[in-house]
Image (tube, rainbow, N blue to C red; front, side, top):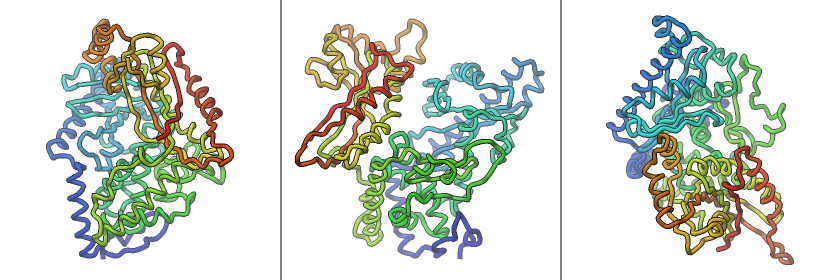
Length: 529
């Protein structure tokens, strides 16, 4: 018997401590082969490149803290001792990253280094590096962030200061007392690494967990149910679900964990929470998830609770509709896993692409558009995206709508319009024959705008402006979001009236502090197949 059975993981005893059978081992080998075929694993050379990038960022962090410390009057020796350390979190920390994945990175600094220093001094140090390909700072984000591409690798950098004078390389973040005297943004920044570390500490066999999670992440992305902002579980939530199944079957192999994942979660008594350990008290006057105490927590449909103090629900965005979609996909997975384990189907069948654009008779298209820059459109469309789930919640109140299913990805385009009238109609979602339309990479275009100097044109910017100038046309950026509708119309009244939820949605979006009616436009249109 595996030694992992000597320890109980989770909030209940395991369901089974059985070792894998020969058949399960064979199925697991086929799973790994399929994951490799799907491109889930990165080459050793690319992984080594990530290690080098993180090493460089650690050196920059120490230089950053030393520079700020000396600016604040410390001696060179004291400034050097102030330290500074980077931590990773998310898919990289969990060991489930693949080709092209970004690295979520936390920079921890001592108490005299501020967030403003991070966006000033550290950003300047980054810009001096020849390895820097792209940079975009978002200081006003919910979690303030600097996004970079460094030696070809995307890195998301966040910063948190602790209430201590030095941050040595030996520092770990598991001591809850380190959270004292921090503001909410610092707590949120630290939470990612603390949760990731706890998840890894709470699974019996990390390699089994990692392979199973790779498969579940691939499945969730293919089935279009991987997006916290749209009301589906995000990466951390899927990781916690897989970890819980690993706890219940501590000696099982990855293929078995995946099979049990679908069968247990289809029968789970929601809203009973999924927890990897009991909820802990701590030193802070902060809210910890507690449905007995807080009415909003009672409204969580599929609560998955983070294991690090202070415990929070990672799935508070799930609505009645997205829960129904998730449960449908879990049921599909359970049936397929039975066939896969019996040899009637293959792992490829589990990872088949979603059918969202064929599933429904009725769709809503939400158009967020701008007659400004790519950066303005990126901000506007990001804000609209964050409100889509509110529109879904309002649509669910309409009796004839059985389901409002938001799609997890948006579609960006640039349109070159002949005149103001055409530009207005394009912004309202009309397909105009005279307008030239091209697919857009808004993030790249916005980063280009961010990195250009005063009066300097980037290639993307220049191409866009030059093409518009050449054709004497107006540039309109559009981002389209789709919602699939399952409708049960009254035979006596075959009209679907969604004016009220749409008006509320428009008002919410237009109340954005940066909204400019001369630049921004929001529109919802019915699409019937």
